[in-house]
Image 1 (cartoon, rainbow, N blue to C red):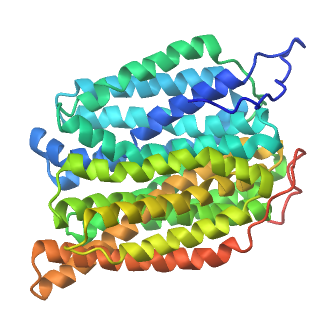
Image 2 (image 1 turned 90 degrees about the vertical axis):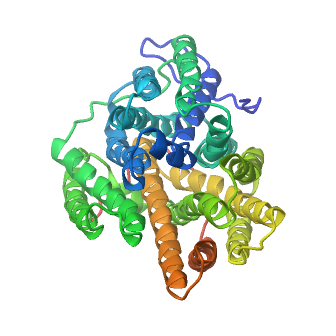
Length: 493
């Protein structure tokens, strides 16, 4: 992956006063490594039917291969605010990629479901560290005037890697055993570790941050409970949830309330586990809200479109994967361009039309039925990704660029965590609306395919309405002034 040739930030000095190594190879390797690990977040979706047969498990059990991954991410990511502040870049990179590689090997060798799930959990532990690590490194070493372009490259990782996950899985499963989804990734991960031994140096600063165990437990219960509850909503609608979704959801909300109260108290002594003073930045708060909406729409459509294509239109997994590919490629192509435009014009000229296009695409998806031609489905999905591509990079750059250096690691952890919550929320919302709509249509005598198409229509109507409301919020987006000072003054508690 090529970075812009004019990105030549001045490297920070090492402790002995000598110039540090060039940062471009470090960032390039971090971007490539993050792409590989994030790709695995959605690679299991189209493989679940095959795994249910090969491992002799139910749909509710197989779903844990995705749910467990998301849960682990939700538990580990909040801890990265502390990890990034306390430990050097090189050590964290090797920890993340070693965990990911070990999990990939375990999954490839798995004789049964339990070992495969364990491998996915270990994979997710490494994945959870990589994205905040990449964000914080870029914010520390790339000048503000070039951050848009770099965030454009990072958007390829965040949005495109999950989008092409189903395509990669569909291609592999059409010719090989499901274990090859892991065997083919393992050499790439090991190569990243080998290159890291040569290229990765400590280009960020560390501090004597303290680890607050109660905060870590509360964050795990809070974010884990929210994502688990949201992931159960779709299963509950189809009657397969092991527990009522409200139980983990309530636990999560209560734990998060206690977590927030504790952080506000710890901030008085600058010892917060996750510093919530990031939200005193208006640009950060607004951008984060819109990122949540965008991620919900992206992941909701990523889960719903394959279900519609396979169950309503009876298409095979390879065809479905190939149909999802153009939208992901388009988002990857435009991401660096959008980043460069952000550096020149700021966020609003990009975010506003981008959100309008995304909302229009979701309204276009409400037209999908049993007779919809494939070309129209691909065109509308590409239009959605085009719109989201113009929204995602400017929002992330605005959010993180509005923070002082002392809050970079916490801002990265917060945005990465909320992206996972948003992805789970979007998936839960779209799947639930689809399930309820399909059940209602079936009760009136509709066949399975027709009922599925009706459920998909209802889900996309709600998604289009939410995106239309988000268009109004984009009117308030502004380019933040460059900040490079201490944390904002303590807010009242």
